Amino acid sequence: MEHFKIQQIKSKENRYFAEFWKIYSASFPLNERRVSNQQTAVFKKQEYQVDIYLSDNHVIGFIAFWTTTDFIYIEHLAIAPEFRSKGFGSAILKPFIEREPVPVILEIEPIINDLTRRRLKFYESLGFVQYDHPHYQPPYHTSDQPLHLVILTYPNQINENLYRQFTKFQKNTVMS
Image (cartoon, rainbow, N blue to C red; front, side, top):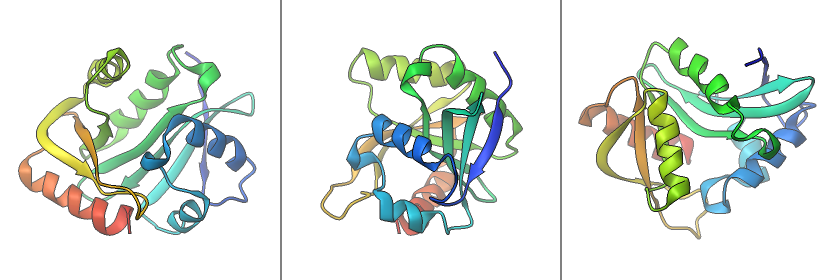
């Protein structure tokens, strides 16, 4: 797999923002993502970062994540549709999680079909483990309900205390 150029996006003025936004909007349903003005606001939070992965000046994919002293929360990870199922997800995510000194937390949809089963297997192949506790992500939009999701963690399962810390951070910082 090729080596990527990684660039951080900090605002809508970034030259790659439009490509990032196109992948982001196509990859997540509205109840799992922000709208434009929310994205502008979240860029201002110091814990938040979007890293885009470039090949030949094209955005292959991105990781949008939050950094705390106790964990990293990958809020969104997506590969451009034309590059999916070609190993880019692993090539991007594996070095990311291996460099982190604290647990990495992410959420996926409950396992209900082949697509969600494949997604779980993908993350498990990289060393993520499922946290066996019911989890509801706070809504992105006031008209939405909390979203039932499954927590995955790397390299080990987190304890109840860290889970509570994460949900408090998610509610008070990520979704505020």
